[in-house]
Image (cartoon, rainbow, N blue to C red; front, top):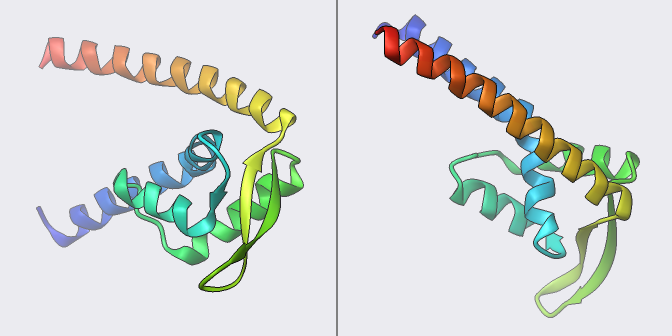
Length: 119
């Protein structure tokens, strides 16, 4: 592949990650209260690599939407830490997002099946 093609595929990957990142963050937090670095670690472990500066605006946006709340927890290793958890509204939104994701991936996989059948 040429460098232009590499760039296009990297850009596609970045756009796909960006579009689904809020949903992934909410899925992580649904497992229990999470500190920002815990969320980053889980995203990186799932190959949804993001930089620290990316996650804070998303957490703020989810908080403003009233999907998240946070509590300050004292830390033995420094200043208090902000732990995020889902609100009732956030759990409802997550359920809706999951339904939308399921419908979306079903549609995409259907198209992939047709493509692979015809290839």
